[in-house]
Length: 92
Length: 138
Length: 375
Image 1 (cartoon, rainbow over the protein chains, first blue to last red):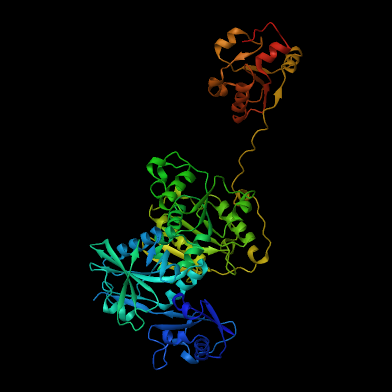
Image 2 (cartoon, chains in turn purple, red, cyan):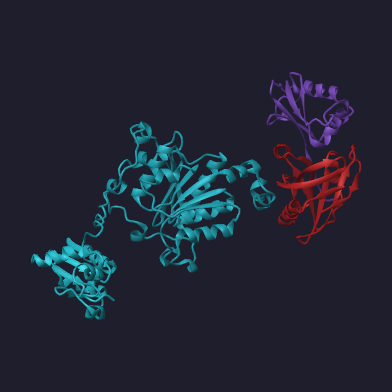
């Protein structure tokens, strides 16, 4: 079992849980497990093509999965998965 | 409605004025009861944008991950993100909208000639096509 | 946990991922002991205070002298004559009121070193003499605490970290102290006022890195700085397998003696005393001794012991040269206080047989001769 930490604004779609235990051997499977338990999270995390939305980053422990094996990144028991948005902006 | 306590507000304004004429950014921690949000702690973050920072900001996801951790340790939630608009109004620009995320409140501080002028809070919609103004109290 | 006030103050630290909130909290939790608040201690104390090191201990017992101000920038002209430890605290508090400062107004000795050092995480040696450096090193080795070390002379400085886990100690570099007098102190050899600023901040940098666990600490490397050439060089330091830090055979010793510094003469035993009755007995027995009355002339005129000689206490130092150091002396005054001081004057001049008459002439009047008026 790995643990996914739910960012504050998304907890309303996850029955107010701040973390959710998920099964799955990879990040992709873990996220699928999460959105199966809480279908309302799906549109917040994934776009219509089923890909992670552009501003959503996923970390396994301290590592960004983009620099690991992305969706296929292995998840072990006791790992912590974090969902972190990327944020930028500016004038004009 | 979003309320910012005086101590975090002082930190936010000081950070925005200190980074002038560049944009600053940071995270706001506090509590939320539905749409009723209270900011009790503000944490300045590094503007990680590698080009000209006078009109752009970027927050590293790693930094936001650390913010999440800090919030959990304090028993607080991440309520929103603040950034500054140097010599410009506190509106939510197209760049802001497209590069934001719909999960948070976004407070924009207008800094005119190095001094705080006014501020607004914004809530991007789920599709990031427009942002609604949120009542702000500080 | 950081307060909002601390977040504002340390924001330039917090926005760097290498420090961040976590690192700043480490700095806040850290306890660093600075030994000496002179040339090296000054910049270290000021910058560590500014950086938010939560607890800073200071060890010093000196007072600020005008000749310190050329380099000890933590003290100012208004502080001349003040205790360095108080002057340093004032400056640090002004820089950062959010930290805790602990003052140890003592000379570090074998007797108190372990007790003082034990509560700190990191020790910074800013002293200027060999006995104290060996003492700090040995105490750090015993307690397993890193000693962030620096030294300065004229235009050159050195810095390294001793006694860190797995690293060498000061004795690996210098197993024995140099003969006394071979290495002049800054007072004798001079020092460029700016030099301790540069070298002290190398020390401060290493302290902060140790706390953060960031970068490559200066362990096993001796950094040499030459201000005239403006060059940094680095020497590799190795742990000596025969050194006490490797064998574990370490205990605190007499470092003054170890460094060949002659012992201060033993303080004289607290004034040997004699009662008025025993003085009378000496007189009656015709013993050879000199009885000196150290009161003022007008007191002497009120009443005196017949065989006594008047030398008022204030004149005694001038008269010492006229007295025979090998003779026996008894000193008295009205009640015994002034004559005790008089005895010290004579003993310091090398007189061996000096006694104080207890209770002074008042006691003489009570116990021996009531015809001597009391006043």
